Image 1 (cartoon, rainbow, N blue to C red):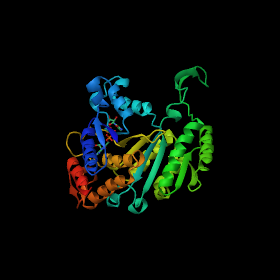
Image 2 (tube, protein in one colour):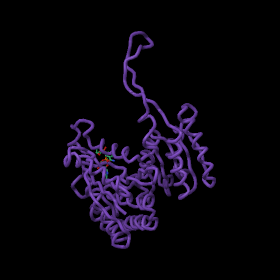
Image 3 (cartoon, rainbow, N blue to C red):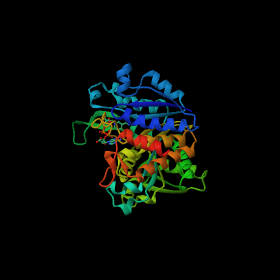
Image 4 (cartoon, rainbow, N blue to C red):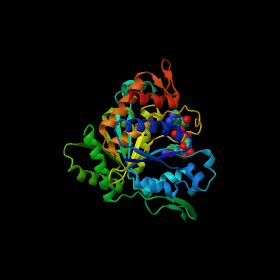
Length: 358
Ligand code: NAD
C-alpha cells in the first residue's frame, strides 16, 4: 500500500515524522506500507515555485492514500493568493475530488477536564461529522460583489453567493454517511435548514431516498440552528451527523472544541472510491514550530483513520488507537494537554511512546 506523505510547513514535518515512525513500526510487523515524501504548501513554493507542485499531485494521485501535516506560515502571507500555501491544499482536495470530509470528535476520558464543558456533559463523547466538501454556497455560481440600484434611490454595492446542491452531490455524501453509521452506532442525523432554504429541502428529500438502502440506520433530521445548540446542550445524543459544506464547516469546529484539544483530532477527506487524504484538523502552528513541543497525536490518529477507511485494515487502526489510549493512561502529555500531576513529554517522545505501546 503506497502512502504519499506530505509534511508541509511549520510543525508539519515534526508531527508527520512521528506518524511515519508509527507506520514504519506497523510495516516491520507485517503490514506492507510504502511511503514517499513530497513538498506541499510553503515547502512546495520553496521547492518548485508552486504550493502544489505537479510532481506532488502526481504522487498523491498515484498513491493509495495521502497523509498531510499542515500548511501555511507568516512568511508566505505576502505572496499572491494563487501562490499561498492554503491554495495548494484547496487544489489538491479539488484535483482528487475529495467530497466527503470526516471529522471525528472523540473525548479521551483522561482529557475530560480539557473541555470547556462540564465533564458529565462530554464524558463518553464520540461523534463523527460527515461534511460535504466540494459544493454548496462556497462554490455555487453566480457569486460576486456588484453595484445595483438601492431601494432608497441611487445605487450601492451588494455581495451575493449561491447555495446550490445537485441531487447527485447529496446522494454520494449521504451514501458515505450511511456507510459510516453502519460501522458505528447506526444512528445518522442529517442537518439542514429545510424550513427556509429550497437547497436544504432537496437535501432532505435525497437523504430520505438514500435511507431506503440502509433500513438498519435510524435517521433523524435537525435544523442547523438547533444542531448548534444541541451540540453544546447534549452532544452525546449524536452518533454520525451528515451536513452540507457551510453548516459542516461551522458545526465541525464547534464539535471539535467539545473535546478541548485541537492537537488530538484527526480528519479524512474521501473520494467516490474511499481513496482519501488524511490530516490533523489543526494548522501549521508557526508559534511553536521547530521546538519539538507540538502534539503529534492528531496526525498519528489520522493514520488510524487511513487504515480504517481507505486501506481496510481495521485491526491495525485499532492497534494505533489503543496505543494512544495507553500513553494517555500512562500520564504522558505534550504541552497543549498537560495538567498538574501528568508527565510533560516532547513531540518526538510522544511518538516514541506510541511506537513502544504498539
Ligand atoms: P493553528 O491550528 O495552526 O494554531 C492554533 C493554535 O493551536 C496555536 O496556538 C497553536 O500553537 C496550537 N496548535 C495547533 N496544533 C497544535 C498541535 N499539534 N500541538 C500543540 N498545539 C497546537 O491555527 P492558526 O494559528 O490559525 O494558523 C496557523 C497557520 O496554519 C496559518 O498559516 C493557517 O493558514 C494555517 N492553517 C493550515 C491548516 C491546514 O493545513 N489544514 C488549517 C488551519 C490553518
